[in-house]
Image 1 (tube, chains in turn blue, cyan):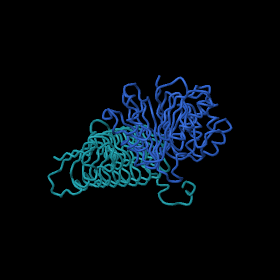
Image 2 (cartoon, rainbow over the protein chains, first blue to last red):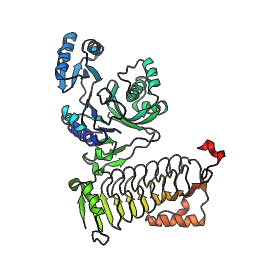
Image 3 (spheres, each protein chain N blue to C red):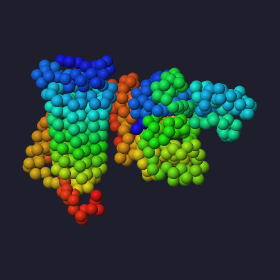
Image 4 (tube, each protein chain N blue to C red):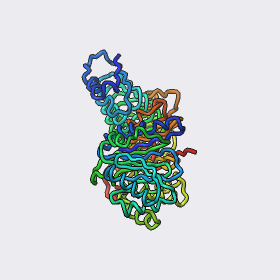
Amino acid sequence: MCGIVGLFLKTPDLEPRLGALLAGMLGTMSDRGPDSAGFAVYGDRIEGLKLTLRGPDRTVLAEAVAGLGRALGLDLDATLRDTHAVVVLPAPREAEGRDWIADRAPGIDVVGAGRRMEIYKEVGRPAAVAERFALPEMRGSHGIGHTRMATESAVTTGGAHPFSTGPDECLVHNGSLSNHNDLRRRLRREGLAFATENDSEVAAGYLTWRMREGASLRQALEASLSDLDGFFTFVVGTRDGFAVLRDPIACKPAVMAETDAYVAFGSEYRALAGLPGIGGARVFEPEPATVYAWERT
Amino acid sequence: MPRFDLRQEGLRALNRSLHALAPDTNATHWTVTGPDGAHAVAAGLDLPISVEIEGHVGYYCAGMNKRAQVVIHGSAGTGVAENMMSGLVHVRGDAGQSAGATAHGGLLIVDGNAGARCGISMKGVDIVVKGSVGHMSAFMAQAGTLTVLGDAGEALGDSLYEARLYVRGAVRSLGADCVEKPMRAEHLAELAGKLAAAGLAGAVEAREFRRYGSARRLYHFHVDNAGAY
């Protein structure tokens, strides 16, 4: 089943409340996915690069961050939240940092990177996961989230959304893709790296590849309609953009609400019911095979 | 007249209260506030009462409705008025997918748009959508009427039996065995009656619509049609 949510603020007014609003949306979608949850938040833009690391616990993470700092000869700015840490690196040192983590920090995964995006995902009830990472205190311009009901594979964090395959790019997916193995092979030839055998990660990788080749988020999603085979509702975030796409037969549920202040997405309207000003919002079901995209300039 | 706040009292308490009403009840007009997208609001009613819901509802609102009049002052999720037997369900906003699915009777009015599969397997209900309907609407429809003031999406009336489909706007494509048919006097009269029932008398003319129905080529199995299944 699974639930997905997204919130994109059009103006800065609600930015201090983004995390609290997203946490409420995730909590409501527990009924659709009580096993694990994940979310991405686009906070203030920084000069360096934020790497979101996931580890077994705080101690191991803290040691890894300290080791990384020593290896790079840098006094690293890091925020530890439960099993995740956000480390700020100078952008040119990213590859070096990733190599060190891969070689020297077993059990630590890099789950996302970007100038604004941070990603958190963990096993547990969505409301509890949001609390563990202090989501209600986070501020930002947009965010997306996923609640998982495991039906075919184990309840692990590896398969948890959002998936990020490019800087400041992430995706949550409700549905299943049937041509992901073939597409993964093709994308690997294009130089993309995949951390899992998950179909949704391939969808994220596909969009990263299209945008790397010059497509806008809207164009990348339009192209995906021809190249992805399966059922999907996607909610996608980029550094300044936000988009929604459903497959041509609209297999998975979706509802959206738009006001002057925000655009919100939920698998069900219940997820949106707590948003400010929802009574005056335009509430609609996004049409199949139609890209809905917004960008902050 | 009773007012019921779903945020305070909860969904089960509402449906239990509505189901427990005696046939001679004086509580014939209910107002429900704070639905917040809850599922199965006012489902399974079986009395000529009126229920007004102030806000958006989730799935299966007014499902299995019999005799009651349910007005949703907002949008409805999947399966509004599914399997309705009689009465009236009126959505003032948009309806999600499968509105009026399998419904046997009564009238479903949607002021906005209805999503995909509107009237799927309908069995006698009258559905009037003032906006447009999504793809595969009236799929396998067996009886009743679907009236659409706007447009219809892909594969309208796929594999339908005897339902009558009236569309004023464009039809993106017709489904298997669905064809356009002439509007005869009896159809104009029938449609005028449905429009009047939906409060559209004088606002919309029956002659603005085109009629679609079953070509009856797939109606019974015929070996020559095997390739079409």
